[in-house]
Image 1: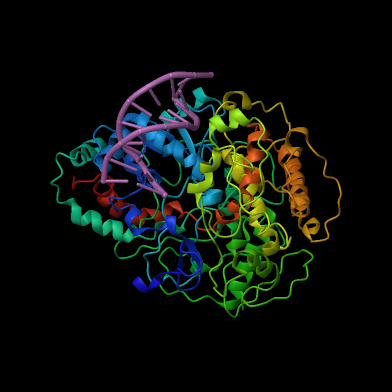
Image 2: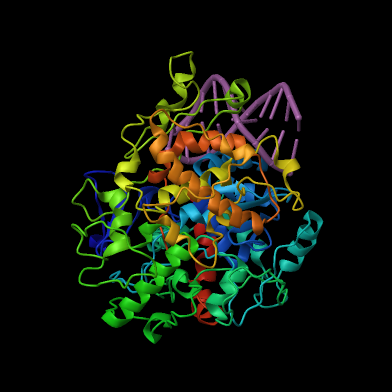
Length: 600
DNA sequence: GGCGGAATGT
DNA sequence: ACATTCCGCC
C-alpha cells in the first residue's frame, strides 16, 4: 500500500506518483486533506457528500457532468461546519470558500442556477487507470458525477432555473435508494458538541480507504450525451449530436461511488476516454476483466488490450482534446498512433508511448529524466476584480511557465511597477513553447482555453451571458464544454508544426490577445488552435457566453502557468450502477461516520 | 443569490 | 494554503 504512493519530489514537489508511473497532483492527494481527514478540504467534502446517497436530498449531482446542486444550503453548511468544527458556518461563508475555487479552477458556478456549481473536471480529472496495478482495491473511484449508463436513466440538465428547482426535488429518487432515516442518522452524528461518537476510528479507517480518492474523476467534456456513448455504446458517429433528452429520469445513476470497502471493492473503472472514443473505427471493447468490478488488485494487462486501450485513449485525447498527460508511461508498450500525421520529434527518453504521446509529454517532462510527466499547479493568480476594472486593459503579459510560479507573488506587483501591472508575469523567455515545441495541442493550449474560459471572471457578466442566440465568439465559460468540443475530425492535421497560417479569423473580442513581447512566435499557433476550436465550439454553443476580454487577459497571463495547472487525465468510469450496489451497503454504513467530524 | 476584497485564523 | 469571517456591491 504505502509503496504505492511516492512523491516525486525532485523536480516538482507536487506529484504523487503511483508505482506504475501514473501521477496525480499533490493537491488531489493529500492525506491530510483526504475525505476522511479532518483537514478535509471543502471540495473534497463536497465530493464526499455527493457520492453518498444519504445526502442526496441535500446536495446532488445534477445537470451537466460535474454539476451539482446544493439543495439545502443550510444543511450543507451545517455539515461542513460540523466537519470543520465551525458551528458558525453558514452558506454564505461556505459559498465564499467555494468561490475561491473558481480561481483555482476547481469549481465554477453554473450561471443562472441557484446553488449550482460545477466541478471543473477538466482540471480535476484525475488519474485512474484501472488496469494499472494499484496494488489493492484501495484505489477507488470516488464521487462519480452522474453518468448515464446504458441501464440508467439520467436526467438532462434542466434548462431553466426554475426547472432546476423542481427537478431537484424530483431527484429524490423514487425509491431506488431509500433515504429513510438519513436525516436522523445524520443529525445524530453531526455536531462538534456531541462529538464523542465512536466514530472517530471508523472515520479514520474510512479516511484511510479513501485516501487515494481522486484518481477517479472523469474525463473532461463528459456530457451526458457523450457519456451515453460510453455505456450505452450505441451512439455512433455523431459526435455532437444535439442532446436530445433521453429518458429523463430523476435519479442520477451515480449517487454514490463504489466506495471500496475495506475489503477493497474495486470499482470497475475504465477510462471513459476510451469508451468515449468517437472514432467508430476503433472498436475497442474493454476486456472483461476491466469491467469487472471485483477485479483483483493486481491486474495484469494483456499487451494487446493495452494497446487497444492506449490507442483508443490516444485517439480520445485528440478527439476530445484531452490532455496529453493522459498518457502515462507504459513500459514496453507501444501505443499505436492515432490517425494523424505525426510530427518529427524523435522519440527520446521515455520508453513509453511513441510519438504523439511522447511529444506531448515532452513539454512537461522534458527537462527531467523523471517519468513523472507533469508539473502541476492549479491556481493561477486570480485577477482581482478591482484590478480588472481599474486597468480595463491590462496588457497581459504572457506566460508563466514551466514550473511553479508562486501564486503568492502574483498580485504583489500591483504597484506601478514597470511591467504589466496587475498580472503576475513570468519571463516570457522560458516559454513553454520550447518545451512544447508546438508539438501541438498540448494541454497547455487546451487547458489554457478551458481554464480561462471556465473561470473567467464571471463577476459582472454572468447574468448577461446566457443568450444562446448570440453565438458569438468567446469561449465558453464551461471549460469543459469549451475546449473539448471538437470536430469530429480532430484538428490534429492542422496541429502539425507546420500549421498553415490559415483561417484564423480574428475575433474582435478575442483577437486582441496581447502578444507577449517576443511572444509572437508562440502565440500564433495557439491562437490558431484556439480559434479553430472556438469556431467549433461556437457551433455548439452551449448558450453560456462570457466576455472574452477578461479571460483573454487572464489567459495570456496564465499561459504557462496553466500548463502546470493542467489536466491530469484521469479516467475512471463510474461504476455501473448494478455493480455499485454491492458496495452501497458498506457505504451507507460508513457514510455518516465519515462526513461529520465527531471529534471536535 | 452571488461576487470578491480584506483581514484574520489554522 | 485554505479557509473563515465580514462586508459592500451588484
